[in-house]
Image (tube, rainbow, N blue to C red):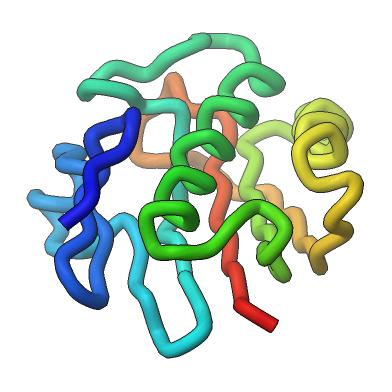
Length: 136
């Protein structure tokens, strides 16, 4: 078992962060499937608290840090990311979140989809990000 900076643990084919939603809703932060690491949607929630309330850019960076730690805990790296999906609550956040994604993944150039949604589980959350990584 390995443990990262956000307290993530890998137990075989699953990565867990210990987050309240994982336990409450019965899912893993990430699943290791062969040469892939598939990361569940990540928000800027750390230790049960939403960080950077009102700032979609900083929430995006925090969510990507959490997602990338799951990728690393699963045995891959940022360079292995092949897909980013992001969900924003407000139309005006597409460019802000896109800029953050570009800063993190600009050299990697994964496929990417952005979707506007009616809301997330906590109204303070402005963005949720999923990523998939694949060892070539």
